[in-house]
Image 1 (cartoon, rainbow, N blue to C red):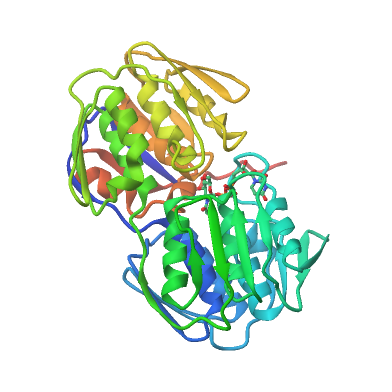
Image 2: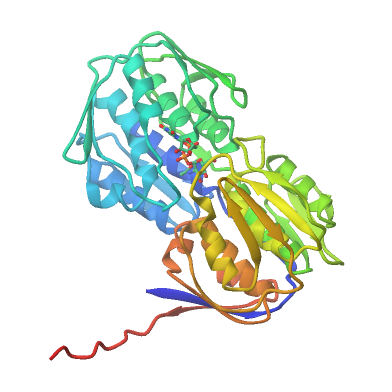
Length: 426
Ligand code: UD1
C-alpha cells in the first residue's frame, strides 16, 4: 500500500506539461475492439486505469503493446465475449466494452461494475439504449449478458446526458444497420475525441459537441492512428492547486477551450488568468474570495474538479456554496478535508464551505481518484506534514503526480507503506 507524504505550505511555481486525457483514452481503447487491424494511439497517459483497460482488451483476445506514451492495439483475431469480475470491479469504465462487443460479436457478458466509491452508478441508461437497438439482456449471478443478432439504428432519448451511456451507444451504433440518433447526449470533450477517432476510422457520426448525435451505420471500420486530447481534469487540478497555494504556474499542452468555466471561476475567486493557444497561466497574489459553484454536465463545471475547488474555497475569505448535481456521494471527501481543519457542512447535495485562514497537515485517506489528487493539493497548501493513504487511487488517474508537483516547487514523496507486523494471537 502506497502513500504520499507532503510537506507544506509551498506555493506552486513554474511550468508543467499536461498528459493525455484518461477518460478519452479508456473509451478509445474500448472502441478499438471494433477495428480488425492495428490501431496506434499517441499521447497515452501511463496510469493504472489505462493498464487495467489494456488487461481487459487482452483478456478479450486483442493484442496490446505500450511504447512510451504510444499504445498499439490489434483486435483482428477472434475475440471472446466475457469481461471478468476481477477487472470490472476494479474499474467501472470496463463496461465500455459492452457496446463494441455487441456490435462485433452480437453478444457480450460483462460483470456488473464497481470502481470508484462515488455513489450508486447504475448502467440502466446504457442497457435501455441497447435494447432500443434490438439487444436483449439478462442480469444474473453478478453479470449482465446481452445478445443482439443485428443492432438496428433507432432514436434513443437519454433521461440524463450520461457520459458512459452516450459513448457506449455511439460505439454500438457505428456499425449498426441504418441510422441511430442519440438525443440529450453528453457533450464532454472526451466524447468529441472518441467521435474524432471513430470518424477517422470510417464511421459517420454527425453532431459532435452537441446534444444531438446522428450515426449512419457503416459496414466496417478501418485501422487508424490517433492522438488523444490533453487531460482537462489533470490540467484543472494543477491550475486550481496553483491558485489555492498562492502560486504562479504555466501549464503547457492544454486545451484552454475545454476549461472555460473552471478558468472563469478561478478569476471570480481572484486569480489572474491568461491563455495562449495551448497553454494557461494562473497567478494568485492574495487570499481567494468565496464563490458559489454548481457541477453540471459539460459545458457546466465538471464534477471531477469539485474536490480541488473545495480545497481552494476551504481557504477563501467568506463562505461559498457548492452544489453537486452529477454524483450523489462525492462529498465523502469532506470528512477527510475536515481532518485538515476545513469548516464544511454538507446538506444533501449542497456543501456550505466557511473559509478558514489556513489548513493544517494531517493523515488522510484518498477515497477515490479525484478526491485523492485534491488531498495532495490540500497537503501542498497546508501547514505541516500531510500523509495521504490509499495512494493507489491517485495513480489510477495521474501520471507522475509527485514528480510534476516537485517540478513546481512542492515537496511530495511517494512511499511504500511499511508492513506492520501483527501481534500473534494467543
Ligand atoms: C464519466 C467519467 C467521470 C465523470 C463523469 C461525469 C469516465 C471513465 N468517467 O463517468 O470521471 O465524473 O463521467 O462527468 O469517463 N447514471 C445513471 N444511469 C446510467 C448511467 C449514469 O443513472 O446508466 C447516472 C450516474 O449514476 C451519475 C450520472 O448519471 O449520477 C452521471 O454518470 P455518467 O455521466 O454516466 O458518468 P460516467 O460515464 O460513469
